[in-house]
Image (cartoon, rainbow, N blue to C red):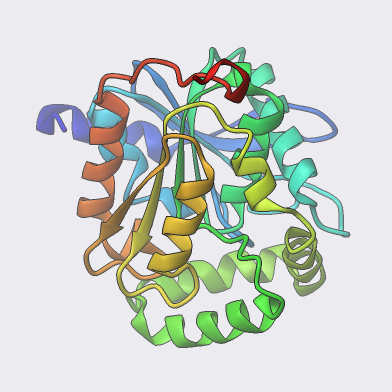
Length: 269
């Protein structure tokens, strides 16, 4: 991170912008110049959620963008919520509206499934993939597991995060939030992961009761060349609770030289 650039990037990030991207104008935040990184917020949240990450990563030499998904933040959207394919399509429309080149995509929590779907179905758009606190566990009782995990996670989060989350959830509305969450359970994250052919990093907090370290390893193992980094002190909202370690891990991954393309199964010896 370049210290003298941080102030300018923070000022740019503080200003919200809008772009026509489909049915409704999409609100987003942007800062920095360089290789493109698109960050997609988790369930019920908005671009505001990346306040501890966007400016810092932009100061590292990236063009960082964070949209509000339709129906969340201040982007209008359907009351019935968004399925994972619908989230993926919304991110693609956002990229098209801004004429973004192939880019790195970073998702948090439920939106990890959206960027996985994007990389699986539209691989030409994605150069690298980052999954922070991903969801998509295959266990039968995953709704109960995530519900209990979220309850356990609340007292572990920084107190300053709770008003930010509460405001975003109230704006989204309970029905939209619930239907989006339930729709995410009908998506097979592992099937999408098996189709990804770009370098991928799964980041998980060592104090995250929702996305556990064993699950992170299982999901990374489904991605050819996927790897895991455990963030010390990270909760489920590791992007907020452990921003320094998280940001450094993201920047290191994005600047690491890409490995040679992996062979397809048909070409393997």
